[in-house]
Each structure stands twice: as structure tokens, then as C-alpha cells.
Amino acid sequence: MNAKLLIKLFIFIIVLLFQTSFLFADQEPIRVRKFPNVCVTLRIDDVQSRITTYGQKWDNFLEIAEKHGAKLTLAVVPHRLIEEQNADGKLVDQLQAAVSRGHLVIMHGYNHICPLCLSSGHEFCCPTSARVLTIEKRVKYLKEGMDILEQQLGRRPVFYCGPGSDDEIESPNYDAVTTAGFRFITQGDKTYPFKRKEVIEVPCSDEFTWALTPKIYKKSLQEAKLRFLKLAKRSPGYFGLCFHDPFIRDGYQNGLLAQWLDEFLTYIDQKTRGKVWYATNEEVAEWYFELTFPKPSYQ
Ligand SMILES: [Zn+2]
Ligand SMILES: [Zn+2]
Image (cartoon, rainbow, N blue to C red; front, side, top):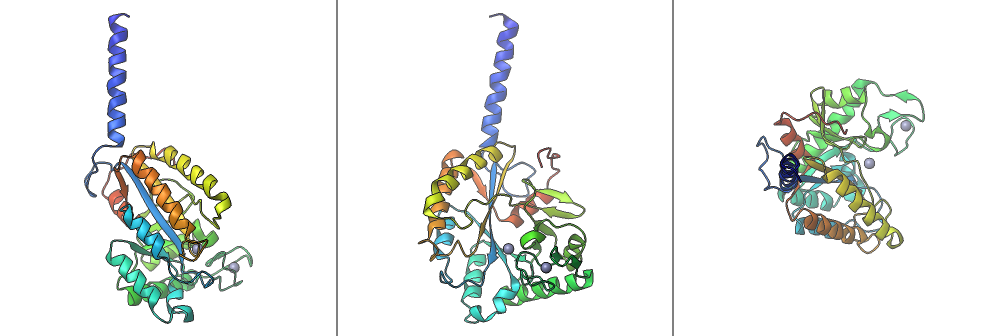
């Protein structure tokens, strides 16, 4: 082997070592202009659906997340908090307790029901009636939702998550959301945080546990692991994972999602040697806000 080839080989090994250690390097605090390692967010949508079949509790899921040091981003439908099934205030108590321990509440529509066609598949962009609410009406609903969350939970939300097919927030919904005062948006059509106009978007693009049953448990876990490995390879790695109520509840399939979460986070902890940044969507947005970010070519 000649000298030139040896030098090339040496450089190649150095680069390889640098890249590997970079991915799992010591975690940096937020707001430092350095990348964290692999960042994982867990967003729970439809908190809480009107289904009462499985009981209202989701303690096991929360406990498992906390066991791994993970934080939940709870996408709450404001109107649910003032409905009859939650008149006992237990859901509000549970949300307040979760927030006090570092989890995040964001706003998920106003009522998750379209006022034009009464579908729960969307709210402000109605494909069924091919009609749209005026922007003034949208802003009014959104602000009412923000008021409810502020009254019930003590903090006005700054993060918005569109319900159902509203998820891909385009004009005029985009304008309504920003006019109402939201600084951040989360939706599902991208796999990496990015900035559109003045709003930072932190996506949660993957869901593996919708209507999970023991029969599809192994397959869904395997798919999630493969997806994580793919997205964690980027530098920095980002993986936005989504779950839905009521499947996260203790009474759904004997707490199957809590078990799934435990296995999946154990896998992530092992793969990253514990150097994973489990963040809320808002922490990611704030971190992104502070960065001069490289243009992601893999959006
Ligand atoms: Zn509709
Ligand atoms: Zn939803």
C-alpha cells in the first residue's frame, strides 16, 4: 500500500470516528448553538376524545414516559374540558399535574368538529361542504379555545395542532392561526422542524399505534424501530412520534400502548446509549428559534 493511499485511509477513519461520536456526543443544553444528538418528541392528539368505554385514566402511559425521562406534548381539544364528561375536573387536574412535571399542553382545534358538516374529521377546512369559514370566524373560535385553555390550565397556548385533515395547515387556516396569536405549529407532512414565514413548525409525522392490538403489536414496534434508525441518522437526528387518545388510556387493550412505549423507548435508550433528548414540541421550537439552522434538504 503506497503512502498516498495510507493517508486517504487515515483521513477516512478520522472522519468516520468524528461522525459517529458527533451523533452521540454529550448533550448540549437548549439555546446553545450546537446540535443536540437525537431528539425525540411524543405528541398525543385528541386529548380527550368523548369515548368513555376505556375509562378516563392514562396514568400508565404517563408513568412509562417519565420512567424514560420523556416528555409528552398533549394536544388538547379545548372544548372537551368544559363538556359534561369532564365536569368533575379530573382531566384538568391530571393535565395540570402533567404540566407541573414538564409536559406540555398545546391546542388541538377548538371542538374537533366541523361547524358546517358536523364531521369530526376536520374543523375549519371543510372538504365535505366545499365551503370555508371566514377568517374572522376561525380566529374567533381559535381565540375562544385559547381562552378556555388559559382559564383551565393557567397558561395561554402558543403552539397549535390542526385537527384531522386540517392538519396540513395552508392558507387561510395558516393566516387564522397566526392572527390568533400562535407562534408555533405542529403538523404531519414533514419530518423535520422548519420555519415558514415567522412561524416555526415542529412536525410529528409518524404514528404506529392507532387502534393497536396484540396481533399487530410486534409488527408496529418493528416498523417504529426501523423508522427511528432512519431518521436518527440525520445530523441532528429528529423523530416526531404521534399517538392518539383514547388508545393511550389504561383501559384500552389492558394498557397495550404503555407497554409498547416502554419497549420502544428502551430500544431508543439503548441505541443512543441514553444520549437522547426527549423534548416537548415547544422546546424543539425554542431551540430551533435560536439556531442558524442548516437548510434541511430532507424535508
Ligand atoms: Zn365539514
Ligand atoms: Zn385530532
